[in-house]
Length: 106
Length: 118
Image 1 (cartoon, chains in turn orange, cyan):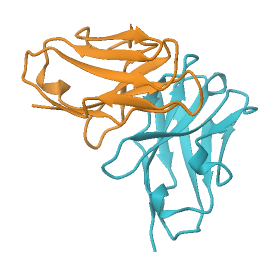
Image 2 (cartoon, rainbow over the protein chains, first blue to last red):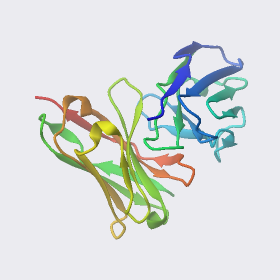
Image 3 (tube, one colour):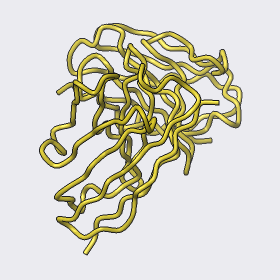
Image 4 (spheres, chains in turn red, yellow):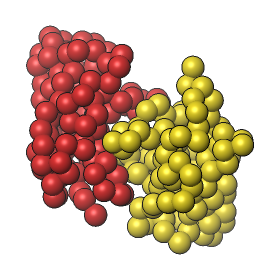
């Protein structure tokens, strides 16, 4: 099975900051990496799919990059509503595993 | 509006069974793969299973193989997760989601809570 490892596990930042969350796959997953945002008590929400495609309705301050084994989610100019937990997921091969999550805190 | 609504969760003893349902509306159900994902209390997301549009292919995470069965009923616009031989570690919120061709999941239901405890 493919393991997805996110770093850091938690991150403190301020409104207006630029932050990057990394995700590494245990083997190549081409560009089949997706990013989700989850707020407490809510279902996850898709932000980025296939590494760098912005989901319709997601703010343009979110961007994704990478291919092979190394991926990143970048948020430019953090807004108050961005403080949440973020997960990467590979959909290259089942089981479509998730990273352990990165909690973004104010 | 696309909607997914899960039901069927509850409290069950170890070794027991539950059948979860996910009723969908707002899109052509029979053309999409569907997934189940779970989240243990205070933990991260774990992909559980998926089923392809015609129901001929079903995939599972190793920890549930042989115990859980995913199925779908296009007439009912629903996907199901039959869970047998439940263990304490199966406790969590179970969410269903629509899967696109590249494997990304959107949208998601709000989930149904399964508690396995003696």
